[in-house]
Image 1 (cartoon, rainbow, N blue to C red):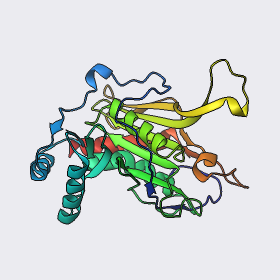
Image 2 (tube, one colour):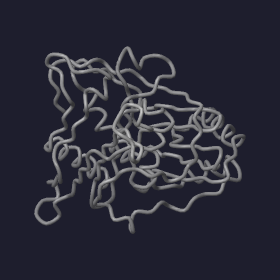
Image 3 (spheres, one colour):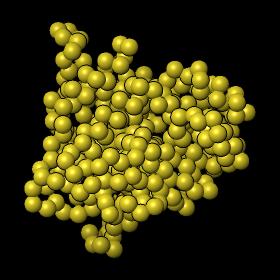
Image 4 (cartoon, rainbow, N blue to C red):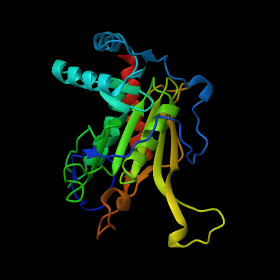
Amino acid sequence: MASIASRPPAVSPSAASTSVSTSLAVPSVSTMPTSVNSTKDSDPPALRFTKTQVLFDTIDHTRGDSLTVTNVSLINFTKIERAREKQGRKFRFCDYDSNSQILIITLPTDLHKELHGRLYDEFIGQRGIRSATRLAQGHSGQSSKEGDSAGGPKPQQAANGAWPTLVIEAGFSQSLGKLRLAMWRWFSLSNYEVKIVLLAKFNSTIILLEKWEEEAQVRPGATTTRHSLQHLTPVLRQSITITQNTTTDLTSYNVTSSALVLSFRLLFLRDPGPGEGDFVFSVQELEEYARDVWALTLV
């Protein structure tokens, strides 16, 4: 179990609403190199929307965890949303933007759920932490988002419509680029009320974990004063790769970098008290996480 000193505050279910409109275009963000080969990391072909039932039939026969749908007007999105509720379907709207008419659907396979759920369970499994919702929503007339795992502290984030401070997004058939777009949209649509976005990307040879946080950007040529800070932008604070040891022992794993650390201040919106501190996922815990993820590929 991830370590943390003493008793942190509880986290509460998070839902959100916003009037910010942002198109589904790849943003400019500050990044560090990763071990995922971009030439091999591409999204499956997109589906052009025609009818709701055709979409549902396609979902039923999709083997991955993500499906991109184009030509989805706001009226059609509303129809899909209502039909999903009526039929009790479990897929999620990872992202929808009415300007581009692009809908990205997440299919919660067992592997997908393990990628994000295991990390989130470690986070909320601490003494004094209460389970938060795994469905954080942001919705307006122009945009809609449903995350994989998310939560925030009580009482600050307990109010209806509050954004989570932590969001975890995962994918294996979904490309790293699409995951980064989802990350950027969480920050942008929440006006940076979301403080940490953790990405978990898996392929057959590697698990890549990326921890993104906000950073204030200074206007070029301006002195560093409060008034010179023009905007916030996502910054990659930590990148961890986990690989399977294929040469000697398939049940052992190599973690490149160090333990995963989640900032107490960003998660709970205050300084830690006596005995409190950052959440730390040790290298050993990350190896155990990898073991459980890879085990699902053998089922």
